[in-house]
Length: 476
Ligand code: SF4
Image (cartoon, rainbow, N blue to C red):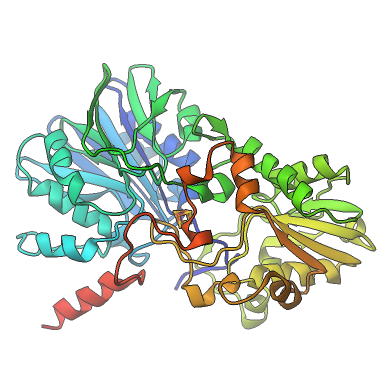
């Protein structure tokens, strides 16, 4: 049994990488690129390589460093590779759902890694229902691979022929024995960037992965674009007319690594700017500004800069908490935040604190943090959140609870402050967020704040809906 023992933050989705570099140690490059993307998914990791007419895949549950070792990387030689790290947003955490997923195309395997969520998977399942290869996994990603496997011709043509069938969010990589293809939905919800490296080209979810393997940023994969990577360059087709850009605004607030560039701008700088905006919108007299590490830190630094109130660390984070197969006992589970944070009592005692965090989901983490800081002697705890209240669930690749479980969907800010025990609570406004990011707000998906979904949402929205279908099928 595995559990997530740290908090109720919205969880990252997935990370993908694709590299063509004949003569380079391709699996090692993919490994280190995935290592840089580990924050996007810690449930499973996998690499597929193409070599001499074959596609080889290794994938398993666990962190990148646990799934691969020196021997396995040496056995994965080739001219091209794709890789994937996963946090399950559709389908449970089991081996079959680890990616890259593979399907037989007749002339060999096609492997696929996908970041995002499709919202029309029930329709797509009907299209592939007559496929002689039964679906093994319970994810939307395997359905994309099945569509590509049943389409003859080059992989480039197969992606271009099927991309219009896919509704939802996808930044994906696909590999056959002689082609590596990357493609992105028409709204560009999830990031995907192209890099040039010595001896070839690559794509990755974030620029931090390019930095890790010594690649230089070329540009983003455009919304609706399909590209074929070769050792000599990039071949591009605009397969879908680009729609209004709906990049997930939470990539800027929380998901992306702070050293990555999104839309050409550094994420750490944007988060610091969110703190500056928040200090202007929600000032309060206090002794110290504290960031909840790590995601709250840049905004806390910005808040302290703008307010003139000193910044300090006040909690130490245990960086090794994450997916664990060890069940904490009842007492530890009741206050899971103590597994993640330990307060610096000598710093906190008697102080009026401004505590900056990136978001509130159910409110349970905030409640535990406030209680922990008060126990450590804080005289006041003013919570400042560098995003607007989350009132609506995400259908585009982020694991969030149902609307009923989102505390802001049914409680006012004052009520949430009272429930969490905070002395005061304030969120950054959408306008403030827009100013901090430096791009017009209508360029982003903000549906979890506004309920305005630009891409159709599915009828059936449970994460494990395909498990239900599989169970039904097997009982017949
Ligand atoms: S609903 Fe929220 S988390 Fe989901 S894609 Fe839109 S902005 Fe991102």
